[in-house]
Length: 344
Image 1: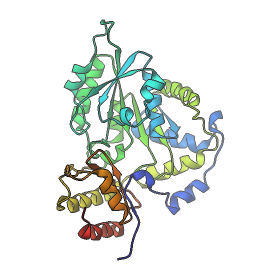
Image 2 (image 1 turned 90 degrees about the horizontal axis):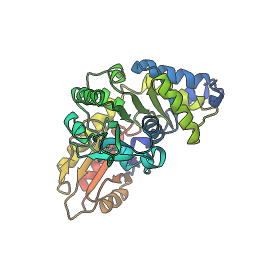
Image 3 (image 1 turned 45 degrees about the horizontal axis):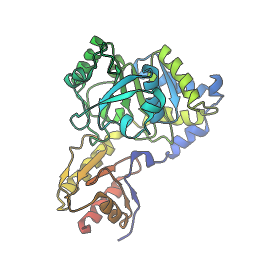
Image 4 (image 1 turned 180 degrees about the horizontal axis):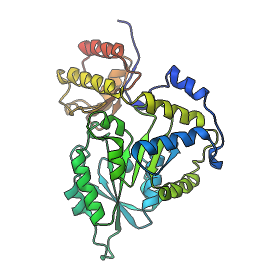
């Protein structure tokens, strides 16, 4: 059997297409610290208009946009309410404590999704000096650790109402929001009406080499720009990268459904294997499955590498696959053929 390298570690591994590279090379650039890179300005204006929000800021990563948003909304001694599986809590280097000097109230949600009642119960009494001030609620959609699970938008609206009633800000870690939007009836503007800030990643399913965007009011983005500078995030001729973002927003959103289709196909293949205990429900491009107690995820991942298939452990007995634009039907067929002989 001819070996084909299949990289399913993340949708961050995909590379720019020839068309995206061409758009990047043709970009008109300036110096973004001086605020005169026309392509960055165009990208920021484009995403802000798409979501019906006042302004946006181009940053290096989703971690940066999330952490800047938290820093804008929170002061030392405040508290962020989020699910225990949230990226902002698990995978951003303790940034909430480092950048905003704030604590975290963790909620045990459903596949990483919290509800309005849980948020309400998590709000501290602001008159009790023993507690930090509840200041910010953050949700993640789609939910990485929840297997790419999607929020019910009606529940998001209920969470927003709790925030309004209790003077809390609401942030969306929308690293893979467009994956969710391609599977639901909501529009970007629907989300723009709900959230105080939104983080959008360009370097995952949208296929850009680097970059994320933070959206909010003009006042929030003005503050965000200052914190981006403090973090060392001032760009220069980053319009070349912004051009990739513009291309992605215009060409790579609808095709996300192809990734979802292939993820579901992987799930169907895995569900028939004796070494798979359970496959999480697959709503977008993330496949998480549980192995029996007798098989460690690290051992499974190592065995997969013998077939030139890369994936990541997502817990002691959990493994994650993520489909993307560089994972084609050819790669899917190869994966299927390998699974016909795979055993551990």
